[in-house]
Structure formats: structure tokens, C-alpha cells
Image 1: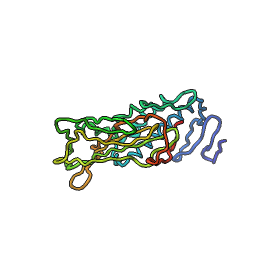
Image 2 (image 1 turned 135 degrees about the vertical axis):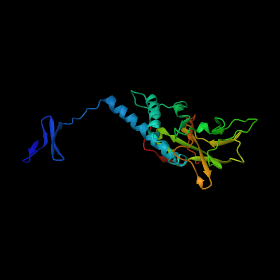
Image 3 (image 1 turned 30 degrees about the horizontal axis):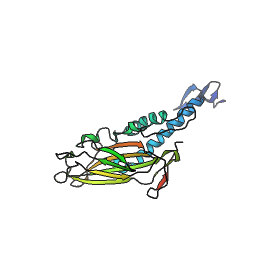
Image 4 (image 1 turned 90 degrees about the horizontal axis):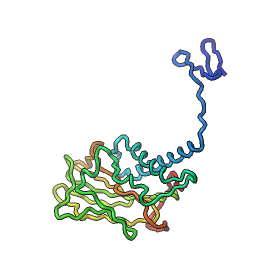
Length: 257
């Protein structure tokens, strides 16, 4: 119902709404509610769960990202995850079915698109999974496999972070598994044959990320322009999860049943 205050009409009248903005009468169409179909609600639910997982990944690897990601990181990561969760969700039962290859599209995903990790590495590391151990391994070479340095950098901390997610239970490991190595520009700068093993649980999504933190005379010199870090591996480990005291778990925002 619209009311006249002696000068202006205010409120709704039929299909229109009367408002006053900066001393002028404004007339606009009355907003109407859009009825969501069952399919629309399902799509919205799937999108929300993809968005939740995107937030988890960005937060879990924050210590490597250093808040030096590109401004489109959220949209880029969410775009890939939405494709994954849509492909892995049964449209009739709305149940998720993940396998070891479901998250392949996350491999080599850079957290800063302006600073690709592979440009700084002498070679792409291999991921070997055997006997509940995941190993990040640089290929052996007859010649030194040297890391590329940036201007002003004297040494570099190569940091590998691993996180596990029990998607159906809505749980994640409380802390990252971590290994680091200090690479010196004029000293120890040969990654040939270097291996980094990690114990892994069965039946979990495993995400492995690698970061390069360069240091100069006064500390870390990474920036929004140069901050190499990427996902090296993402996949479901084989087998059925069994409780293991080696891994501590905390609750996620969503579960993917």
C-alpha cells in the first residue's frame, strides 16, 4: 500500500513501488520472487559445496601462499572445483563418487597465475605412491638440476605441504604435513635426485603443494609478481580409511556424502 505524505507517494501500489531518492520521486517495478525448481536448488547446493572446498584449500595452504596470490585465485580455483564436484555427483541420488583421478584437473594449478612454479624448477617433480607412502621426487640427472633464482635472492626455502581430506566425513587433517629444504644460490643448488616422502592414509583426498620462498638481505622477497607455488598432486588415495593416531582431524564446513 502506498501513502501520500503531501508531496510524494511512498510504498507499493499494484505492480509498482514508489520511493523518494534525493528529493525526487522514483517509481520502479515491484520485485518478485523467483520460484526455484528442484534442479535449480540441486545446482545451488553443488556450487556451494565446491565453493566451500575452495575456501578450505586456500586457507589450508595459506602459509605457502603468503597472501601473495593473484586477485582471481578464488574464481580460478572455484571454476575447476565446480567442474569436479558436478562430474562426481549423481544427479538423481545427489551422492558423490570420487576416485583417484577425479581431482586430476587441480594438478599444476598455480596459486599465482603471474608466477608459474614450473618456470623456476629445473624439472617437474614426479609423484610416486607406494605402500602408503607418497614421495615427491626430482629426477636424477648427470648434470646439476639447479633452481632458478630471482633478482636479489640469495637462498630459497623449497616448501612442500600435504593436506588430507575425508570428504564424505567432512573432515580434514588438522595440520599440514611439511618438508622443506634450503637451496642456496651460490652453494647447495642441485635438486637432482632429491626425494621427499610422506605417509598417507587410505581413502582420502590428498593434495600436495610446493612453494618457493626466496630470501634476500632482509628476509623474504616474494611479491605479488613473483610468488611461485602450485598444486603438484591431487587425488584420492586407494583403500578404505582406517583410524590412525598419526593423523589428527578437524571439521570442515561441508561433507561430500
